[in-house]
Length: 316
Ligand SMILES: Nc1ncnc2c1ncn2[C@@H]1O[C@H](COP(=O)(O)OP(=O)(O)OP(=O)(O)O)[C@@H](O)[C@H]1O
Ligand SMILES: [Mg+2]
Image 1 (cartoon, rainbow, N blue to C red):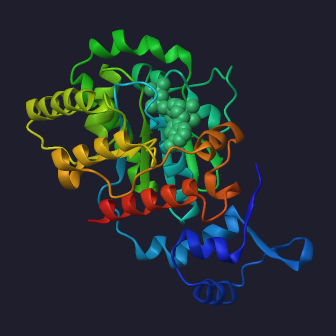
Image 2 (cartoon, rainbow, N blue to C red; image 1 turned 135 degrees about the vertical axis):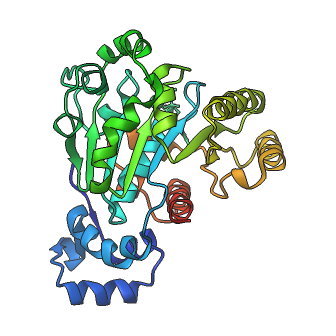
């Protein structure tokens, strides 16, 4: 995996003028690689030096650090948006810990872990006391990942016999929190004790919801279940709904989005992720959308709107 950003793209990523980017590059003496036609380009590592100064440092402290992407309906886009959030937060200069809590391991695969990988997962960390810091791997500049694999499906039985069984993830995560700006958790589409652990460990729940006719009734069940779970713990959750796979030209999608905003108001992200082949291609290429899309492409615009809004929520 290697890709490069030019100055114009960096300025789009951080919504700052090309002049400011250019001055910062000169001050920091960041070395480009020079490609054909004498165009200067910067690796992700070098880009992070620039974005750290111009973006991440100005958007701190992060108060809501741990984010879970959640929905017990399958295929809504949790993993796809998780991947975009993780990689782009890193590109913006943040240090990110990604936790793959889905035994399907899709996030791990997109982040470069082979499908037949059989190393330590959250199972070993929670059930066998394996240190979390030894189970994580650096998979992208600024991103460490706790990978997943199918063996994690065994976790429910030992987990359910533990005391404070919903708080295990929170307690293993606690000592590592100070090393990262963000912790982003991908979940599996079920109501499981492992997912309840993800909810307890999180400062903010991002519900990824499709903008299709039947999405609203499923969403009501999900939100009720989540609120009653948190209510039993005496906690009032911070949550938002991310509309995904929005089909801009269909009246029904517009109706669903309108109904979503009418019912959930400011809980709904302003950013809406449109249905786009680039989002699909991004997972297949194992590259964030900004690595290969034009800055005016819907996927680039929507993902960056989403990530900037995520940062805004997190520093509040
Ligand atoms: N905005 C989008 N535009 C086009 N395709 C999308 C978009 N978001 C997600 N997809 C596609 O939808 C499919 C399901 O997405 P994804 O795997 O991210 O969902 P998920 O909620 O993680 O699924 P699961 O519940 O199985 O974990 C994938 O093929 C993905 O590429
Ligand atoms: Mg998934």
